[in-house]
Length: 252
Length: 351
Image (cartoon, rainbow over all chains, first blue to last red; front, side):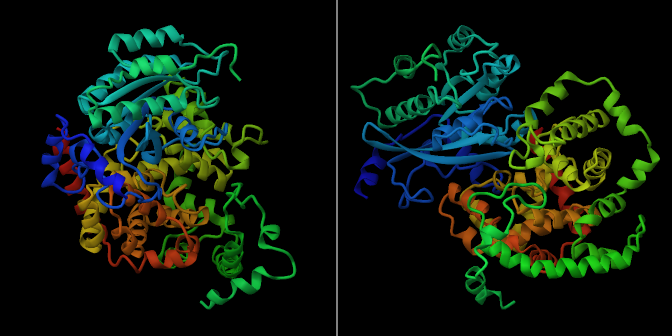
């Protein structure tokens, strides 16, 4: 139990954009803002942090999965959460849902509260209300679907409009295992990511390629930010570049 | 009523376990989940079958082989007590006006399928075909006949028929249920038209105004009828959209058990969208103590999922009786007024 106390003090103390929505929401009805109770953008385990998952944690963050319909957001999440991929067992996500997973990041228990959203455009007016409380966004496209890639710019615009300025963002080209159906080259993804200064990698929920890494990378970045370690610098892009695997001959 | 004491005796019967007696695929083609409670299902069905048999006899007397029904107090009472599955398509079509439309517009459905298709619409629909009821044997790619093709047709026809709505996720599940019950594309199409065009507010249009409105309306109703839960929502700053958008968009599909959903839809087609609020309020009210225990936003979400599970919702006959008594009065006038207020509030905030 003691570890929670110590970690609490270390968590992010201020975040430039977190203050205003909380203030705005305070006097209004329940629809005003989701999750503004999380002070300073960090979900503090103010009560015993065993809640539903009955797993202890030190710090918690909200991660949102966004991207066009059918790019594999739910599959990626289920692969990460349960380590499974059951082809043809998924239903389209309507509205918004979440799952928790606690990771051990260099001895610190980091709980990710991962929000899965409906990808269809009309649902955005429902889901973008949740952006401002997200600490990280994983933006997905499908390497076998050109329009999902073309829409990334529109997604980035949306994100800049609604998310916090310092949100951790990563671009993921999913379904990288589908060699034959691929229409978006890895280099195209890299180029786009570079243009917008966003870390990038390809993933596959089916094979598991880089799935752990995507979430772990984000968790590491968030943890480093929250404890503000002055000695150890952490660069998300460098980290993922070092760790990531590419689709190649050894693909199972 | 005295069912509490029974399970122990029944499950230990010499004929093996309920698991062996009950089909692993339900009557609608859904594969039962791994953790499906066969014992309590069998227990429930042994009582519900008596109800079903009684209702079937009553309905047969009422219909006497007729294909036409008049809406009246008696029929409404009958509908609330459940339409036998063999008459569902007939009554849904008659009560919703779908049958009238079908007869007034012969060949219209086919002409929609023959029309020029918007490639964007086709693509959006196709994205969801494999993701509609993968747990239903009739919706598998390998099924013969395969419902996926019928589903595609109904959704495409509807998108052509109502281009303002086109296709919205959630409609796949609604059309899927209609196909399971009617086993007929054209009827499913006209029932879609009845639901989206007349029965429901604009849940599925690009602005989703009807959805946003009804979520707020539910909030207002909870505030008055179940203030403790409303306070919990306030305390943790939970937007209603987070916990109930699927309830409205999917009309409780995949939220509540199949049989319960169908019983709700019986009333939905006959009485209109007010029933959706009765269900929501009953769910919330019945488990208000649990909902109020939530200590955080995730807790609230979790508890909202929990209240849609268990014997309370599985025992559909009792549940349907409760929805008309437990939430108390809910007049059309109240609902219309709340809808107008909430709608203008949302419009004002959006502009």
